[in-house]
Image (cartoon, rainbow, N blue to C red; front, side, top):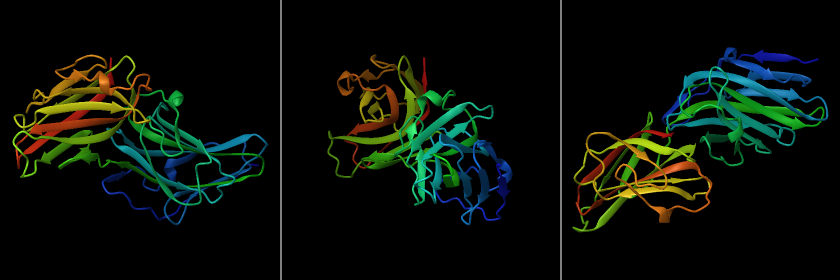
Length: 327
């Protein structure tokens, strides 16, 4: 006989990540049991940390799962990460762990899975579409909606093999996080609401003809087969900002697209760049020598360079937005 209990706790965990937007307010009325018919018992409550505490006992010798649905504040990724916290009290028994993000009509935008991923130590997991995250594998065959589709619900699974196994999961702190972009050089880059803003100041002792680059990167996922990378870019320093490079890498950190120009392609008025792999595009030159032949054509990140010659003590900057893949 299956028992289902939904118990309400008044404690709601505060947002733990700087620049993060909470996606669930701790209301168990927004949580439902989606699957678990083969289980002897299931309970879902909130624990002392304000996270969901899921407990179940398997029934039968085959693989059994329990899946809860969390209705979240609707959101679009727009270059941000989906962050959550998870662990289990029974790591030997609770071996399966799946996370899926879906639209209101159940189209999957994100899907990850693993067996033997959870431990008894709490861990924060930042999910990047298209990219393996630690031991969580990206399920490309499960995804059937574009990355810019609005997400309205999360499906969280735990699973085990064998009869009478006690499964447990603590999960929550669902956040939409603006990542701090990795960068090299004399500047900084931020990502907010899908817009990358980058700026760098040349050292005061920069020699007149010295070349200085500022490099920054952002997570971005998608298969480039038969597609072009589209983006809109501009600069507030069109005279100083001579160089603009765009490169893309897969999850193995292999370069799969690369474009460059030193002809002041960035202007103070935003313009669209349509970059087609293998072709000089939108004023940028295709760098065939940078691309690894036979590399898997699935983007995991994009890398950008701004560059200048001389300009001691001066600033260069750039703004990049509306990044997408299209025909």
